[in-house]
Image (cartoon, rainbow, N blue to C red):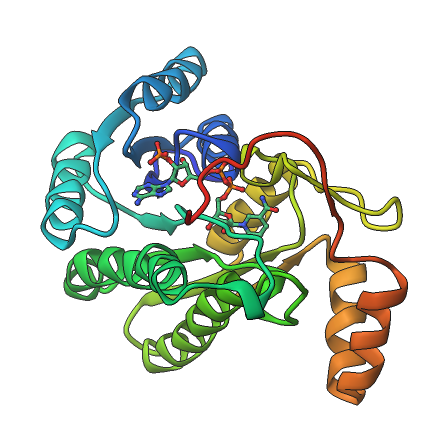
Length: 269
Ligand SMILES: NC(=O)c1ccc[n+]([C@@H]2O[C@H](COP(=O)([O-])OP(=O)(O)OC[C@H]3O[C@@H](n4cnc5c(N)ncnc54)[C@H](OP(=O)(O)O)[C@@H]3O)[C@@H](O)[C@H]2O)c1
């Protein structure tokens, strides 16, 4: 028996990276999946991998910044799978740019997709979970939502906003039967940051590590999980003791990484 046998779960950003890895991981654990993103062709590739594992996959094309489209996507997921037990708010974009060089429209785009897009999903699915008195909303935040690392100011701002919102929502949902979980991955090996090389001390995580954290958050009702656990906890402990200490750790370990010659994907241009 898988850990999620017979569960029905929707995932945004399921056409790539962490979302695709999570779809495949939860299918291995016995769940059926509703796959949401904009690119149908890439969603179909994820769906094929899910179906090859003997699970149901429903493909739903939607832009998370479109409130009506997200509401319709949730309805399609419930109709397509019969019900929903969990919703993974995962879709997102990235932008690597020093704060002094950012344009306001770039910052707004980051907030529009990574923060408001995520909230469109929350407000589309929350009434359904509240009525059923059960359900999990799990979000892919980022370690950038715990400790800001240069040169990611706009992305960091969106992820800190997300972190704050979900901390409060989690407490307000206590006793309702609705569970709220937040995952904080450090740099992960996906197309989103293929143009960024990380230092040897913090190699990019395998997206399946993040997917396993999503499963753990749903099954064990975890509130927050950092991936990978130890180095991420170390950085947040250092930050709690002294911001100068955590700034120093970021600096001496070169956590900002460096840019290679690959083209950025899913960037807020
Ligand atoms: N990679 C990392 O180092 C890392 C670390 C921490 C957190 N994260 C977070 O993890 C999440 C997944 O990122 P990833 O690394 O897996 O990146 P990715 O491989 O680029 O995947 C991003 C996904 O988001 C979808 N997406 C982007 N904009 C969308 C929109 N407006 N509407 C619907 N779907 C949209 C993309 O699909 P379509 O293009 O088909 O729409 C794609 O499926 C993001 O929230 C990211 O911020 C990533």
